[in-house]
Image (spheres, rainbow, N blue to C red):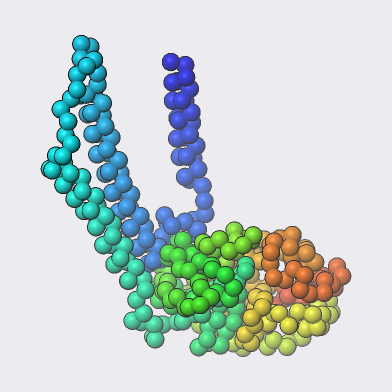
Length: 349
């Protein structure tokens, strides 16, 4: 009896803990709080699948309980053998047909949603962004607007945005839970999906495909703004003077050091770069490497030892590590790269 009560207590505590943990999380990183068309469709499918599973569970438990009570061994019937149902055609048809029907109930809306979210009918009249997954960061190329940026993707609210996705190295998976479902990025072929956000704000994205030691740190953001703000952001990015002289002497020295040591891997402006992230609007970002708060001290630490923040990144060991004084000057330069007033902070407000 004591052992049985212990199991009940453990189950009760586990249930309470699960209920508490279910309330944890971030609003703009939850598939259960959809803020976009794709996420809304995905949630509908989740509810359909959940309803089917609950239905199956209830039926199984009801049958299990009936059998347990009705056919339990009774006093004086120790040698009693109940009537066998082997070869019962009606039962065999029932437990074959019902699972098929349940699978159809799940499969039909799933297939319909898959084709819906892959529809490219409006692609020619919509904003197109070429997305490239890299270890361990994301690059966004607005080819028609001639804008290159990394880590933060800006899109207008209430508009279809088509994402043409590939990988530069291994398999990655693009996922913004609050806006849409997942899409793999492959080195060999391009996959296309569209996203449509219902509300302005900053939505967190994740890589959903194990891609190396820093897979869990391969975060990015989608910044959703009004059409007017998006047009302003596009104009600001297009009119950026990549060679403009910074205001402070320290940042000016940092610019010279950056051009000397960093431009072979990074770019500022519309020039494409195949090795490291584009840093055009670096100072407007809220996160460093997608995961750390962007501060001067953290940026200096990244420049001196990126491996300590993101293990396995391609920057480690592929550049001449500057002195701390030089790193601080480079940080001063990078943090003043703020071409637009449209930022993740303004979108959050």
